[in-house]
Structure formats: structure tokens, C-alpha cells
Amino acid sequence: MKVQVDRRDGLTAAADITASGVFERPEKDDTFPRTLQKEDEATRGLIKAAWARKEVKGKRKELTVFHRPDGKGRIALIGLGPHAKYTPDVVRRAAAEVVRGFKGKGARTVAFRLGSFVVDNVRSEAAVAALTDGAILGNYEFQKYKSTSEGGVEDASIHLGEEFSRDEAALKKIVNDQATIDDVVVWTRDIANLPADTASPERLAEEAVALGKEFGLKVSVFDEKKLAEMGCGGILAVGSGSSGHPPRMVVLEYPGGARRGRTVAVVGKGITFDSGGISIKPAMSMQEMKFDKSGAVAVLGILRAAATLKVPPRVIGVMCCAENVPSGTSYRPGDVVRSFNGKTIEVINTDAEGRVVLSDGLGYVVKQYRPDEVIDLATLTGAQVVSLGDDTAGLVSNDEKLAQGLLLASAATGEPVWHMPLTDYHRELVKSEIADVRNSTEIAVAGMLTAAAFLETFVGTTPWAHLDIAGPAYTTAKTRKYQPAYQNIGATAFGVRLVTRYLETAPPRG
Image (cartoon, rainbow, N blue to C red):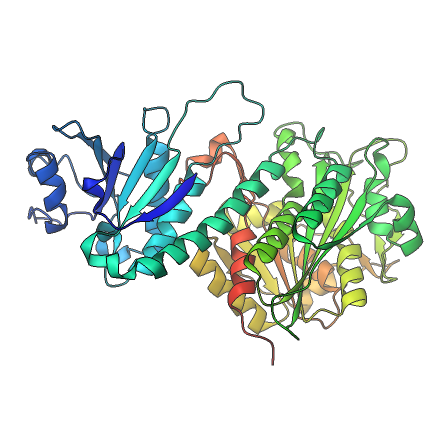
């Protein structure tokens, strides 16, 4: 989808849909909003009449459509909810609801009237970014395997009118920058949605190589032979059951947009299919395990965004890719494997494989690049979903400055995270009787935090943050109805906007 800024008032444009926001009407107050006066004139009193009949209430997700008597398209009023709870994320959701609401209904263009979305606590800069974000992401649909399409909105415009036309240049830049990152998110979703028969570890490595060629990034691909030479026993163990799709570790290097800037490493779990291995999962919903590569694919997206936007820090991306399936050569419960940094791992459960592959990626990037910060992204634990649900990622960190920076980026992008504790209790639970650590615990408690305690073992004292994205990495037909309209069914590319924002805005460590 293309999003552009237009100086004109949206009602004078020739869009199929002109969209305006409307706040929820206060109880016992039937005063017609002044902000809808022009819309009412364009419909020759239809909107005021509907307001009087309480057909328009302004509640969240409420979409009311009026056909203009002059034949110049339709006017859509999108509910924004209570004024007191209005935020940029409300705008983001509203834009997506408009775009999705007209899918298959003969609307190719939509014009958003900016003035109806701007109030004291959401200024024009935040509103245009959120409108762009919501429109592009809300319009997304994975089409690769479909022979037909309903058709929908192809172009969106944000109309400034007299009130904001003087800020046209600045607002255009904001829209262009936001559209750039959203285009990366769409690209990332397309890869993350690919099934396991297509998106193998080799295919993810090929995507990284192609990205490197496009943006001039250095890309290193370590195959199973090189991984063995390096001593990456974690990735090799997890990938040992797959005869057709051997594991890969991929490293991408973006040099940074600022001289002598800090180095941030981003490490992602890339299990291209997770059957659970010998500790096999139940068959119900196993088809969703193609999304277990979402952390590694998010790393691809973050590196693409970093190179496109020329973020200040040097960024090192590490993708830890393997297929976890059972066979006669699979790793087993009871095995002990040695990770890249020499630490040994007792395998208790082969379905706790994500932390095992990440052990090599984290250990490698810390030793090889000595980054100032490390962020890992992984669909790591069902416990994260139990604790925080499908929309909020768990954040665990050993560094308060890094954690706070990610929380600020989360608030700006609408990708929610919750800061969780990590204590010596969790560290004790992952200690092994026969190895340095074990990949599962003997009591079923604090699964998200014991997984994080395991990962901490492999970063040492390097400032580190772990994002468990098991819930928000993808949605299903069942969970989709509880999600904002800009989250489609399938992969969401969660973390790309959040980490990119952090890379753009976080000050150097001092």
C-alpha cells in the first residue's frame, strides 16, 4: 500500500472513502460534534440525523458509512472511544479498522482527514505516523498461496487541510519514514508466514545473503560442517534429527550510521519447524510451529530496517536456524551437549530447543564482536503466553538502561512488552547435577523466567535483554478477534518496529 500526504481537505479529494475519527459521546450529552460539521454538510444532514438517533456513538471499532448524495464516494466515521483514553495506538487501530472494513467492498482509495485525529495529547506528528502504521499493517494479507483475492484499499492519503498545511514538509518526512519501516514489516511477515517445506534453515540463509547483496551488508553463513568446527553443539544437536534440512547459523553485519557508535547484537531463534523432537508435541495446533522461526526472521527485518534507515549503531544480527524433528539421529533427553562458549547443557526436554540453539548464537556474538548490548528475540515458552497472553511479550534483562530503552520504544510503536524479574531463584532452577545448566527444570514453575536464566548463562556480564515473543509473534483465527486490526492472521513480525525504534532513538552508552 502507498501512503501519501495531501494538502487539501479530505472532503474535496476524489477518494472512494473519506475517513474521519469521532470520539465517544459523553453520557447525557447529545451535542453534535463541531469536528463533524463539514462531513455533515457533505452528506446534506445525514450524519447529524444519525447522531440524533444515536446511530453514531463513537465507540471503539464502530465504523459507520454514509454515501454522499453528490456521488463523490463514501464517508466513514470510525469510533475513537473516550477522549480521556485516546493515544496514538487508538489512531493506529482506527486506521487499520477503516482499511480492513472496506476489504472486498469496492474501495480502492481512502482519505484520512488529519484534523479529526488530532487533539491535545496526540499531536499531528504522532497522528500521521499512527495513521500510516495502521493503514499499511492493517491492509496486509498473506497472498502467496491464494488463487483469488477480495481486493481492497490500495492507496491511502492523509489530508492536512488548512490547519496543518504549513507543516507539510515535516509531516511528509514522518509519513515516509513510517512507511519505510512498515514496508519492512510486510516483507518480514511474508517470510515468517512461509511453511516449513519452503522456509528451511537453508532458505533463511539464502534470504540473508540476498539482503546482504541488496544493502551491502557482510553476511556469513555457517553450515553444519563449519558449526562442528566452531563447537556449536547446541544448534547441531537440535538440528540432528532432520536429514533433509541441516542447521545454519547466519551472521549479518550492518556497519552503523555513526562513527565510533556502539555495537548492538540482535540474536533470533529460528526453528523452522518445531515438532518437539523426541519429546514430541501433541498434534493439535502443531501446524502453527512453522512460526517458531519468528525471532530469526525478525532479525532479518531489523537488519533490513537498520540498513534502510541508516540507524546510528553498528548492528550485528545472528540467526540460529534448525528444524527440530524426531528421527533415529535426533538428540535425546539425557544427552549432554557443549555450546560454543564451552558451557555444557544437560538436555531434559528436546522441546526446550530454542534456548539450546540460542546458546551458540549468544556465546558466539559476545566473544566474536564484544557488543555493547545484546537483544535476543525468541518464541521461547508457552509460559510467556500463560503469563502475559497473546499480545504482550515478556522482557527480561540484566541491564536497567537497556530495559527502559526497550520499554520506551514499545510505548512508541504499540508493540507491548512487560518487564519481568530475574532472580537467583530462577538461576538455581536451571543448574544441572551433571552439566553447567539444564534446558528444563524439575518443577513446572516460572517457565519464562527459567528459560531467561538459562540464556543469561551465555552472555556473561554483557548488557542483555531477552524478548520472549511466543504469544505476539503470530495470531490464529481464534486469537485474531482479540487483537488490534493491524495484526493479521499469521505472522505479525513482532519486534521489528520495536527494536528498530530502539536503535533509532536510544542514546549511546556512557
